[in-house]
Image (cartoon, rainbow, N blue to C red; front, side, top):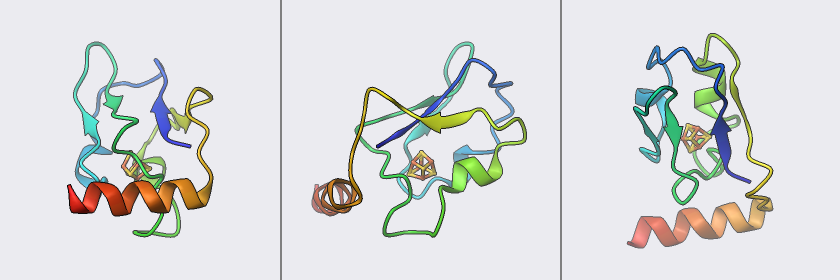
Length: 82
Ligand code: SF4
């Protein structure tokens, strides 16, 4: 599943540069992850880079976007071609 940023976010911006999918944007008041782009870093890294970067641990799985590893791999493929 894609990840989401909760309202614990302090808008520090630490996660933005680390996202290989460029899925994170500045929002108001919290930053936002584009669930259409987030692949949980599958195919890029062992673990989600934004989760590792976030100093307040406010990035969590989005319960509204449940995707299997296969789904995420297919999504990455599709976005790569787009
Ligand atoms: Fe980007 Fe990876 Fe975080 Fe998804 S898990 S928003 S692809 S850094």
